[in-house]
Length: 300
Length: 161
Image (cartoon, rainbow over all chains, first blue to last red; front, side, top):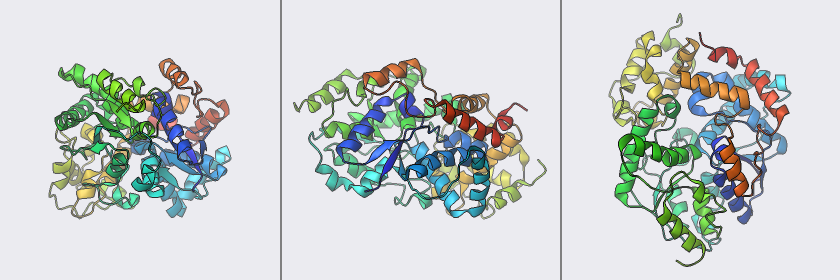
């Protein structure tokens, strides 16, 4: 199987290290050869950098890619934003010689050259393509009796012409990975809608961002689930920390637990909620924590 | 803005001329449900070379979810075109203070979201090193990154005009 370097980005190591630990534990358990990528920076964040200057966006992204090229490893991201930036930059630089030449002229200043020798992967498409739901089931020790509201996020599947993960109105591959754990992926209104954080909206227009989030949360609550599952730490931050901000702004009382898929997978592979950083979220839902501890202890 | 918007978009491989103003983009926009973002109108203004579109704050209400682009019956890369318009706007000096701040944070520490003391503690509770294996841990890598950003003249681009 492909050798990987784990690209952390910003929010995972600097806000939600539980996702970092969960990812490392899961990859190890699944026998995936993945190592750190020392010296990597911000991907850079597509919502802001891609909106500001294409040359800078490509230069920063390609520096991260070159770090992994030097190790002869494909990059594994656990974030839709990092995936959007790195996979798109990698693709554009591979297919456009002019763009590659201009980017390399910047990289030359720091003694680097983009060669186009590796691929950029996202943990969800990686698990789906390299393992698949059926093979994943072989590793499961604790089937999860949970109802889940799955949030794909935008840049995992879009733009679809560059992703090759099928259609974007009602995809199923990620639901299949969720259900491989024993959990039930519950349908809900506006499931494919954006969380409201991307494109620099959360940083630039927080009120708008929270209005969009409130709509998602209302739809999710109506579906009656145990937790939200995502594949992107920026969506994760929006759902988790944003939930408290929504409660403050709209006088609501949302308390919906939020898990990154690597944390959900970690639970079913037998790791404890503590090891996976599930208690480190801003949303503290005692009932849910009790439930996952019972699952983890084999009591449910 | 001496160049014509339409020409700039075309040069970037983004042809918006086939837009028939059907409004599928606006009707599909999750941000437009709550805000004044009207994607159809932005495309129309760009087609008509109305440079006022660059100073319109609505440009920055798009979350880049790509739903409009996926659903466009004419296959116009709408989100990509909107990103190109944003880049033109930035060159003209239109940038939200919050976005300038994020850019400065990356220039300073290599991350859009820097490490804080609370997270260092959380990392240690998990058995991880308090400082992750990123540019934050390696001063020479950070210097390299700063050189790269300067080479791209990013510091000048984001400076207030």
